[in-house]
Length: 289
Image 1 (cartoon, helix red, strand yellow):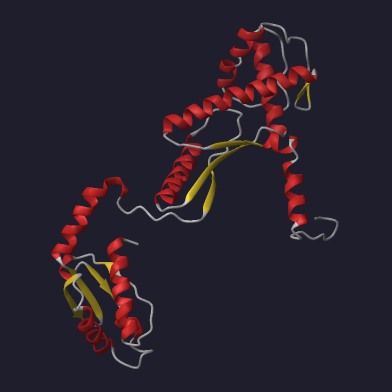
Image 2: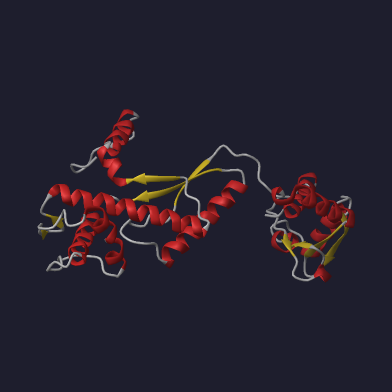
């Protein structure tokens, strides 16, 4: 709602209060300057329940509204619209305020409420694509709007760095690692496709050479647990760095990157459930909490 719309509604509601009239006030900017700057259809919407006709109710309200210095004129139009023409001095003062406050014009007062917005949260198994970018732009825009309106906003990227998708990533990288070293290798049952993995895996080749040759892949796992963990963790680390660069280039700011793996390691779910139980906010049914 614009500042002017809000002011007009406040004035309108004060007139209604003084006249012992009840009803919801709708004020909208007019599409044509010939009908004033703003208009309300209050008489049309409320005349019947007030046992009068729209033009009679409208005239009564117009006579009162005209007394306010915000308006140079207030007009009644058939079949029951009230048109508001703003005083030139009011418009000029608003322009002066805009020039003075610049980008702070319209900023909302500080509110005692925090939003947590989760943005993008794509699996760290590759680069971001246009769909992720769309989500990032929409989320970042929402964060900026909330902040401008006085809300405290925390932006979070929930990193899915646990679970089977990361095991598939490790095997994908290991498969491409062996291929890059000229080894004969059978494709794992599940793997990510695309040239990027053949390119990215050169980081492993340059760093480790053929140190990790000789292991098999079964059920989305490299047979050597230590090697599997290296390919998991270093792949996640690489793609997260790239994802953060992509978001920075896009102008999307995310304040906090949380980790699914850390959540499980630190038993955050259990701790949260314990807190709710302590507060008496849980119950058990059919064997479930």
